[in-house]
Amino acid sequence: MTSTASTLADRYLATWNEPDATRRQALVAALWSPQGRYADPLMSGQGHDGIARMIATARTQFPGLRFTPRGQADGHGPFARFSWSLGPAGGAAVAGGTDVVRLDDDGRVVEVIGFLDGSVGHA
Image 1 (cartoon, one colour):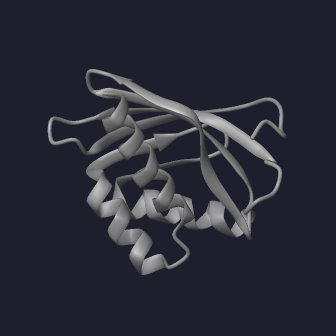
Image 2 (cartoon, one colour):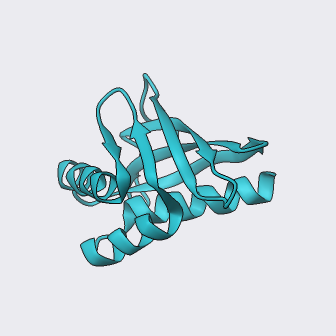
């Protein structure tokens, strides 16, 4: 499942990095189940509209920063996990975390539980 988990991580982070709201909404709709749910210690969202709004809010809080994969994504059954860094393109990370994703039978995201790292500069 490593290649599937890596592809999922790439699509997921591309959604968070998409600057255009209309395109981002389409990416959410393509990747997530309509009942999908996201939760981390700072934010949460549910359904396509709720998740797209949550990502838009995060993007306004971190202008000019991008999510990049960190390490190797892996998976087991309907679950995948991957780590990410947040920082300016080509610059040092200012934040990072690990997301655990549960997929439905069609390979769409049903739930993401996000964990934030306690340190920065680990890109």
